[in-house]
Image (cartoon, rainbow, N blue to C red; front, side):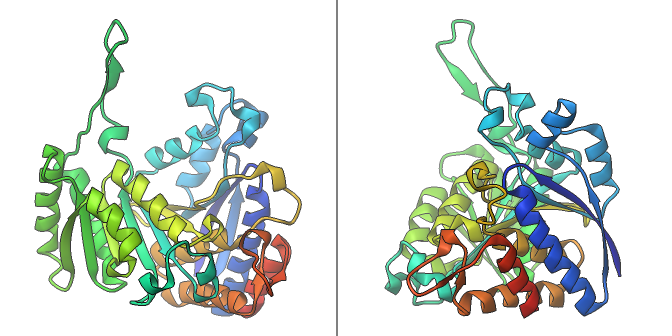
Length: 355
């Protein structure tokens, strides 16, 4: 099969890590008989430097005409003094909005080979380790509601608003993901306080009727935050709002011990998705063969699974990453005693070889 992939390498280590993800994707193509066509385009600081804006119309068009988007990282101190709408990060919000990507998929997986990096006591992981997906609603809620200050500037407000349709579509996305996993969804809200959470819970329960195989339970967000660090193995798919998801996904990611290992996907109603590592652009190590490409490589696995429905191919990438880690190979961010230090390029080569 043939697939068009828009490639936005971005800033800092973005080009370094994207190069390795493309290498792995090409290896998948050779092994499984697929053809990937790459359309490289600019966004973030690189686009600001080239054309004066973080998200050029040409980039949007390339992304819309592709089957999926692979993004490295955007931003850096070089552009910190720019206004909010002109900062590199504005490219991410613009892409998500223009492509209709309302669901952020954030896996948090603790590999056996990296258990020493986990800040939790070993006995807290004995029930089954850590393999969680946080499904965060991405385009609604308090981040997108009406906001402002009074004339005197003494008070400020941010409005939390959700419609039934916004809740329904993220719930459907979460249940669909759960069907491919352990068929368990924990919906996180503040049902005892917030009217928006009462709407959220009622819609989630309505959607659940179409998924009789899924075990659904509800949890208040404060309890969910505590449960993540006391009994994380109870979770499979966490479904939650924009702000709660922002916080809980970061908490879940830190339990894995290294942000350099964490992929993400932003998906919508079509097969088109945006796939990127969770970490930032790390300009201090850009071009030095030091960056960890595994989060970007694992993001490519998510692309194969969620946008292209290539389950075997996605599994193969994830298994290859596990083999490399089990073999003792590490980039500097995940290096521990007795392990072999490798650079960005060699890590990409090792994953490709293990495919």
